[in-house]
Image (tube, rainbow, N blue to C red; front, side):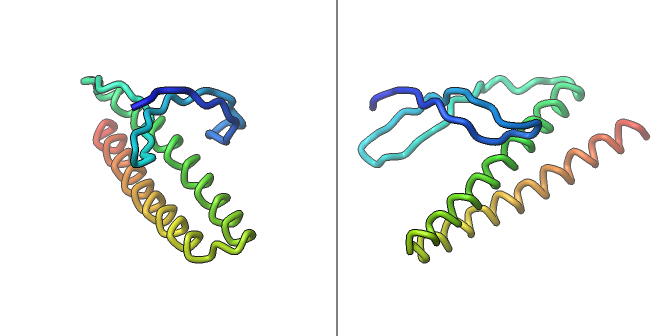
Length: 110
């Protein structure tokens, strides 16, 4: 596997953000974002991480929708439909994360 970085700009909540992503590639062309495996133990830190993850996932959902539109523009309708399904899956996951955050916040107040 080879490891390299890409620098590009895409939206995260709060505006455009230029940053690098490290990716490893194998013969299948599969990409991974590198994230820490350290999950915090305190409620506040978990909420902060979930808030960040939700915003991060929403930016990827938006990115997928833009890619879907570009695929339709170039006549790749079947691929665009698959990307749209992926964006829908992100949307459902984001709804669940948002619901979990609301539950945690409500339970912490009560």
